[in-house]
Image (cartoon, rainbow over all chains, first blue to last red; front, side, top):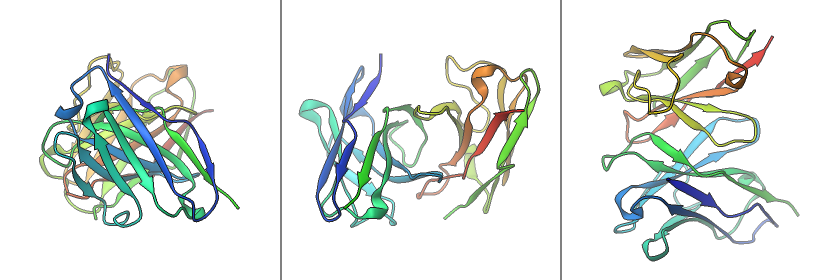
Length: 121
Length: 108
């Protein structure tokens, strides 16, 4: 059974760093891109970027490039989304999702349960 | 960017009724690269349709997708209680994939 299990909710202050994770099981982690998707309160979904675990190749949505870092560690089948300096505007639910197929872009067939990020002074 | 505009914003229907959701793109979607997702409250999105009209294994056949070019439709033939949720379309025709703003299907 394919599963993407994300790390738990976190509360941070503005300017703090944060790294959230997405642990994958049920398939060969290196065979599929993993995406991160943001869902801000009251808004729609936004694609942030994708990482290919086999070689850590990464493609960012230009809107998020430089704001976050996406990575993967294939030795432990885990993808990451990282901020070096959180802002209040980073509040939201963040999902990882499995990207179908090697060609980019594509759609997403399995999703993590989401990680709620709260930024408050 | 390809902007996807979903309408209506909210659809108020009763169980058993038919739901028709629209997704309009600002540019032509190539190769039928359009998907639909369902998001129930407190849950992650769930893939319903890909390639405009293809259903993944396990998705009931009351969900169907259609359309081409810039106009796409998700139809739920007879609403079940578990179908009241938010629905998003997503295009993967351009390198910068985008989602629509969502349509909420609520109980009338």
